[in-house]
Image (tube, rainbow, N blue to C red; front, side, top):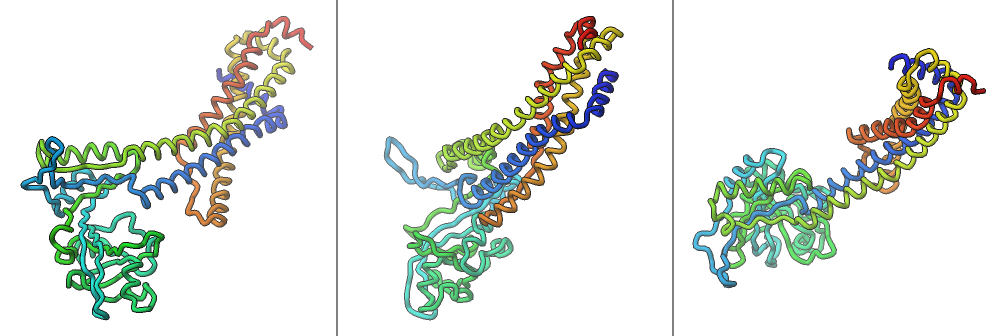
Length: 411
């Protein structure tokens, strides 16, 4: 085998122009495949980031039930569960640091200001810690509360554009930052104002969950707190939900299903995962055509080499070379061509991918970065080797099956 490999290398060195031209097809094919897959990986990461930051697909909501249904008739529960910080802490410990657990408290309040006598009904949303959807792109000015303020229950609030406009007294809504608003008579300092949206009709306010106590009306409009679990990826939602159910059974007993409701959007999750798979398969299949074209070029070169070296093959077989030795010789040439071509193509493809994403960032203002994953490297190198073996096998078998006498007499 080593002798056959050595002969194969010598042959490639003896015909540098032919070797370079046959390698060029693989270089172009692998470069195209790697660049497209790297850009595709970057687009997939951007899509996943957008899904996690702007949708609730990775979120699992755990709400307490206030009634139970018997024969189609709702009956109020005598002692409904009521979540507190301790429940969120317990669930966080059960799920681990990769999963985010948040406690959400919602209610309604009459909001007033020391500047005028106007009163406005406002939905108040309290969270134990900042949610991943609370990003700077939503803000007109200011900020959301931070983790330290959430833990201490700081008396701060971020309000939406509608509520800020109501108390701006003819000025700009962003000027509300620093003002003090009274929620059910309890003062809260405005630290941020949200951007206006098309459906910005309701008045909303966001504050730490510990700051909600006393700042919302108690009674019919009061809603029980709920837990929000955010999985690290869309693929992790199903196993995360299973772990949440095990935690609920351990904490609330066998009748936890009658006391709690666990909700996640399974159908939309499947659609998102399917779309990501189809996108990547399509891009990979599209660029595999380039590799096939390169493989055909290798087969053409090796077939020509077999015809030109028929006499050499006959002499080798007459002096004791077996069929497998000739087979290994030509297969080694094919694999060397594809191996070297794949490495050069890998470097060119990565360079092209980063250049393409840089252009996309400047032109489309999209926060996309090329990403070279281990799977892309393995697919590129593996595909090139498979192409080399597949398209080099027929010329190698044809050379190995030549009769020594006929080969020696070949002109």
